[in-house]
Image 1 (tube, rainbow, N blue to C red):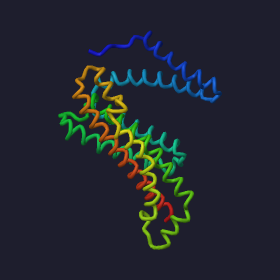
Image 2 (cartoon, helix red, strand yellow):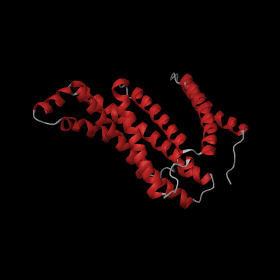
Image 3 (cartoon, rainbow, N blue to C red):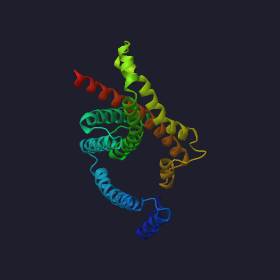
Image 4 (cartoon, helix red, strand yellow):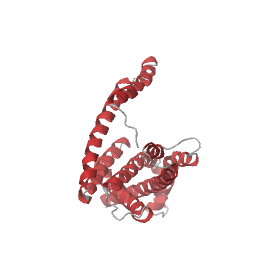
Length: 252
């Protein structure tokens, strides 16, 4: 049985944020206001999403669940384009397409073939899995897209040199794509290599605290690491492919 956290306990837990705020103040980092705003947003948003998920699980309607995932994809696409400092008009549709296709493909693979659920759109499984995938894809794609397009902007000479010497468009962007993959996935690979020794992942700890046996929690964590890694790479590749295809059509 899961031990609930009282509202007094929540308030006491949030008091821990005073420690980083003190150091921000002590060293005049300018991060106090942004930290307070971010903490407030986090608390409000999570309480609201908790309320929404309560009814989402109660209704358990596949169409509502898919609609919620579409909303997550659109918000993630807007956020990704803004954080990577890319034009919305150019990148929004490629990001939406890359995120949605990757999350659906990899998520459904887990739900149908790995977990072997009779109802893969069950809200209790479908929504959390898509949420985990979306969060990881967003962070990886922001780093990857920033690296890719910054490299293209800085080294346009190399790009046009390769095109001028008979390389296809895909071959010309390969050096920049390679660098984007290396930079965005180096932290993921490093974290995966020390998983369980240096760090205990939050999903596994959450399941154990929720009453799951450690063996079951570990199996779920392994699968979550695999699907987030795979979906993130697929999302990055699809987004870059779709954006470059769109850029090519605009140049015609």
